[in-house]
Amino acid sequence: MMLHHLFPATKIIVILRNPTDRLYSDYVYFRKNVSQEQFHDYCKQSIILFKECEKKHGVRYCVHNSSIVNQFKVRIHIGLYSIYMADWLDVFPRNQILPIKLDDYSKNPTKTFTEIFSFLGVASLNQEEIQKIIDGAKKNVGTRKQNMGAMKSETRTMLNKFHAPFNKVMAVQMKDETFLWLRE
Image (cartoon, rainbow, N blue to C red; front, side, top):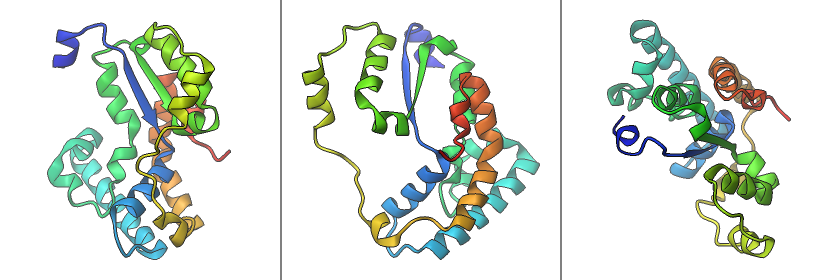
């Protein structure tokens, strides 16, 4: 990877969301005229297509090949974090990568910022400065999800089952079982 060649001491911060929740949010945010039923059907079709591709070509091909991913009805491949993380870990040592779970940031942004500053080896901001950042304008906040309601439990179960093996690998890669994303 060229980045490592040019900047071998690069530190990478990755913010990750529960892949099932990420997919639902992605679907609602980027589409119009959405429905829970359509989301369920699209997920089902995409999982079938992904598994067929995986049998023929292997998982990395199915995640990175644009001719395949463009056939998915939903962007299911994006939540397969362990595949992308493996690519980074092939080049960068684990101690140069800081994975942050979006839920952790949402629950305690001050703690997350402190962790980031420590990881980067820079002086931490004081509480007032951190609060200014936290209180800043929010981006990519959608409202259609609230109008559509929660994902169908049947869909959540199907997606959790699909993501489970990838989440297990991610938990091992990060040495952190919270990346299993078991319901809290």
